[in-house]
Image 1 (cartoon, rainbow, N blue to C red):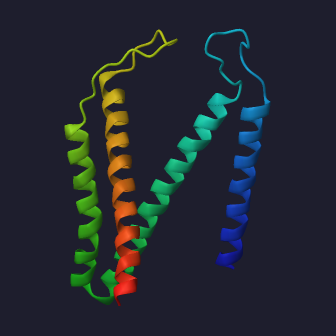
Image 2 (cartoon, helix red, strand yellow):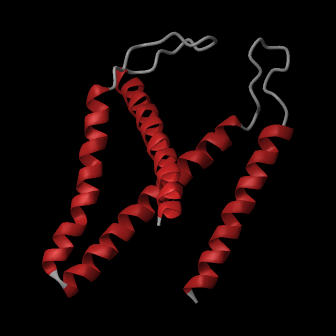
Length: 150
């Protein structure tokens, strides 16, 4: 039953993404004569991506909670150890946020200046993305060599 529900949710999310991307690319522009052309449905695409990030964060939190409860019932000591990885990741994100510069930048075509906090969050997200992408690539390369060595 859960497998069918997950397939339905997956298909709904794929369909929603296809519709929003279609609207984004085929929906026209706000002002076609402007120097920087903006598609009409840019907001819808950005909101969809924010929704996906929120959904992923919620899924991670739920699964960490479920994993903790299951291990707590089986072995309380292992339950405490299993949360150390999650807490370590949160500390890592905090360190990345602390070292992010958050310097104001001039963005062409935008009169509003983003707040210092927002710029710092975006900088931290970019640093985190670079580090996580590098780590993923390194693990893929090392993993393939480790399999060949075995």
